[in-house]
Image (tube, rainbow, N blue to C red):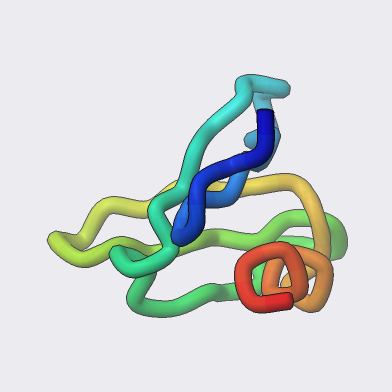
Length: 61
């Protein structure tokens, strides 16, 4: 089943599957060579596997 519009599936740095609601992301930050931190409205964040360019392409193809 495909992800519904506005949502993306990622695997975080602990190999846990996460679902990100795109509209709630405020910005991205490179957290290492293959890690990107996604910041959300309200101040929460999550670190996902992948360089910032890869993560950006998954969010906004």
